Length: 174
Image (tube, rainbow, N blue to C red; front, side):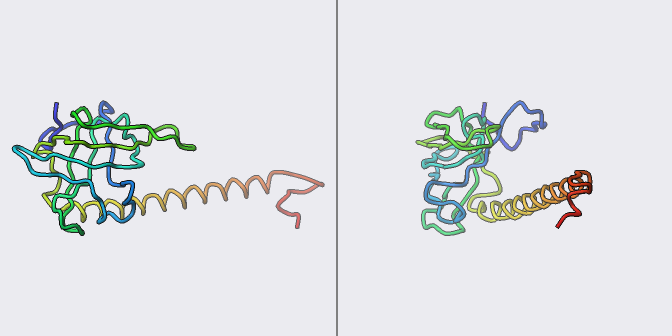
């Protein structure tokens, strides 16, 4: 089975996705990615590697940033949906501290075939899509952090009002 944009899959939890952007030598500098996709009959052959990919080991497919124009820079990046059951796809679990609810992987891609219909957003249009996603992702993460800090502050204030030591709430001590 090859996932295509024409499939109308409901969000049912039956398939796991991953986002494959980071590489061993290209983290935040997306324009420096080296994983490349070469045009072939009916699609692309993808070669390269991705690093620190959340759900990369158990994913059914990975939305993968690839270089489709060898000159480099921002204009030569595309997004491809890579099915993980394709020959040449290998994912290795990385050991990490914390957050064990999802795996983190090193992914190797060796002549992995991706059909034309698995191209997202048009050839060479991936950089803009990635940057828009990063803006939204970073905004949501900052709001999550702010909400968590506010909750911790509220819990601390309530504790300081309720906990009594030496005859009065601890929040009333110096």
